[in-house]
Image 1 (tube, rainbow, N blue to C red):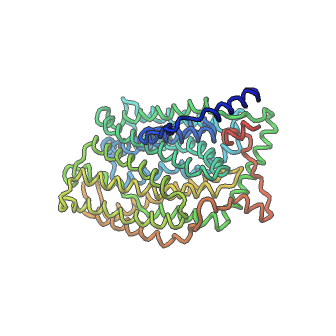
Image 2 (tube, rainbow, N blue to C red):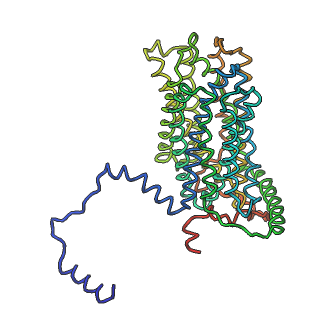
Image 3 (cartoon, rainbow, N blue to C red):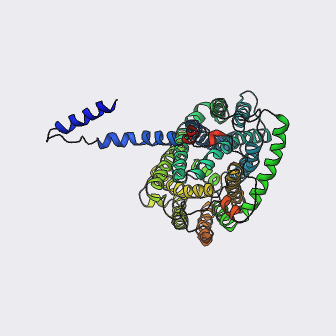
Amino acid sequence: MSNVETQNLITTIHHHPPPPHTTTKQPNPITSLILQPFQWLKMLSTELNPSFILGIFLIYGLSQGFSGSFFKVVTDYYWKDVQKIQPSKVQVFIGLYHIPWVMKPIWGLMTDVFPVMGYRRRPYFIVAGVVGVVAATMVAEGGVKLGVAAALWCLIAIAAGMAMADVTIDACIARNSIELKELAPDMQSLCGVCSSAGALVGYATSGFFVHHLGPQLALAVLAIPAASQIFLGFVIYEKKVSDDMSAKKKQAIANLGGALKGMYETIQFPEVWKPSLYMYLSIALSFSTHEGQFYWYTDPNAGPAFSQELVGMVHAIGALASIVGVLIYHKLLKDYPFRKLLFYAQLVYGLSGFLDLMFILRWNLVLGLPDYLFVVLEESVSRIVSRVRWMPMIVLSTSLCPIGIEGTFFALLMSIDSFGSLSSKWGGAVILHAFHVMRTDFRNLWLVILIRNLLRLATLGFIFLVPNTTRFDMQNPGDILQSGGKSTDLETNRDSLQLVPLKERQDV
């Protein structure tokens, strides 16, 4: 439009004002509420790479959310009904599933410093998917029943595929969280919503598949999320690095040394190792008694004898409650100091565990609450509190990662959490065995749960390890290293463009 046309338009507006009764139309509050999530996603897609958002949906939603929940229920029935294993032994097996997650720093180093055919991220999605598809197909094959050892290896391989894909997308999350601190809670909220929504579908369908296909054949469904990882590996955007193989090998070795040095120097800072220690203790000291409870509430004699479909639906309602927990954190709690928020979250987490104790002792019947209603209440409260407790720890973890080795270091922090989960599972196995909780003997199960709840409350004694700051006040360890005069090669990952905010790429 020319300047003359513009001036004429302005003059017309001045000479012809709108009618005095004209009012601005207010948006419909229901419509605004419906559109808000889509506007939020549009904002994230504008600020970040759309392929990164797709990766969160596929990895956190389908692979981690759906697969993790489906895997949990189906394998419980697999060990109980197909292999007929004692609950304490199953707790040990579940601990072994966490070994690939404990190895996350190794996967992180590989994705940070060892490109494959010129790509740092895409090949690892593909490898993770292939591992998951092959393992799920092997364990689910009908004809010949696998032995315990072979089945365990297949299930560990499925977990390894999930862990590798998770590390790869976590590198993107960590980098973007460092560069755009104001969006760190939004990214974690998106991850939490996708994970919980995927878990909702996984739990809701797991009982149906177990009932109609049996636990072994139902495991074949896990090949679908693994195949989506292969798809993501082909479609996600990533800039190819130099084709000079000799130069790449030298650079990989230099990057590896720089990454290891950076990790070693970073973890020594009290600002880093103290909250990391708290995260480990808060998980490890909450002994897992899941298998003892699962065997109890599916037992037709000692427990309420829940059906396979009901077990899946109870967990599905819990996944829905997890989404509520994410929304509570995102809308109300994300700006609170870490220490204050984690203190109250851990306190409520410990107290909510006594709902399990009431259920085992059947006090719910004294109160006039049916088993199915009480277990839904207990599951919902537990999931909401667990999610509110977990979200700030993840946001804190992203704040502790130096730029350049964020994939490796975030994987290290998550492996500490995974090691905490492994400790929790094996600690639970020891205590279940020590108190003689067996497939048909649950007399001491209440005492096991009481000990677990007391340990959860005891964790409050370590809350001083958490910084009493908000996410905006956290100083990045890379800045501390530079201010301290230390030189560390943290340029490992600069040319993986899917880690860079989209608007920055558009400015190039």
